[in-house]
Length: 376
Ligand code: UD1
Image (cartoon, rainbow, N blue to C red):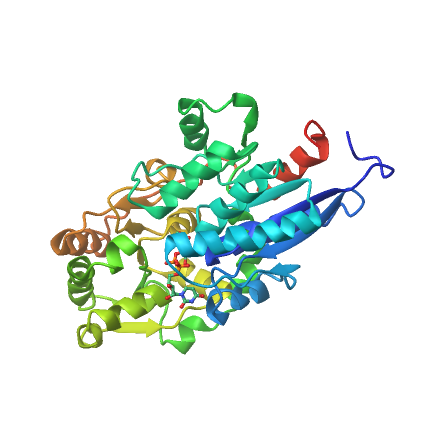
């Protein structure tokens, strides 16, 4: 055990870059901070997401400090963004020489920082390891495969993650089933979220609306596909109010494709700029159902027991289907409308909460690094 205060503290970098990283890293940051004699923790923000509404709102709601390093990489093509992150983070590594780097999820910042660290022989832990959609057309799948291939600690959220990693030949002793860390944040901030006024502000009440999110390149970067989905929203809006906090990528694509009038014509549609964590959680908890292509929201809706229709051909989170409230919907206007009608007619999928989605994932992870002195 390296808990002796005479020993050198373990210096750990926690990497965040894009919106879905923040709620995964916040609980881990706070848990490590409970052991100031054992760990020196630094928060590194790549700046992949930089709008106030995509980043600062979350730092505020999740009560996170200003990052120790802010790399300001901004948007770009995949090659450009990934390369910029690698160049800037490598400089930080040369300077700071951490003992361990922890990356989360599957965004470009995740893979870029993992590659940097491993090449400098710095161990890497991947939080949310093992998830696979088996669709290499998704940039996230590439990031997952790269990050899992080079990481020393594979921290999985669900047993399917362990199975995927074992099938790929990853050594068993690198795999740790720790649970879903996003749920730690949900549990910690659920009461605060209940106090949000987002329902009143938008004239909504429990169960009288559906919540929409949509930002996957496969759905919004192709005009035909985007229209297929908007046509479905048009029909669904005749039956129930729709609230759609819109991602900057999707907002931009609406204007690129000249779809502004189409969107305006959808009855009962409330379009919002991206909203903070508490407001979004409140909208999820009270929705009749959710229409999404996000990964994290499939999991959060399973935790809240709210029906979730995922507008994708596949999911890297199959446990939300086998145990939770999630279902995949074929990307055809008629199929999307039919699935929502079923819910409105009372045919809702009941689910259970998967193992270790219990608010204690950060504790389990920190225990691993308190005990583990093999590679330090
Ligand atoms: C990224 C992740 C995706 C995740 C999503 C959550 C990758 C490959 N993708 O996708 O897995 O689900 O974040 O949001 O890492 N933009 C802004 N302001 C911002 C950020 C982005 O205006 O703060 C706009 C820019 O026009 C940018 C576009 O959104 O070009 C896309 O941003 P980018 O970071 O490339 O990918 P996301 O679609 O956000």
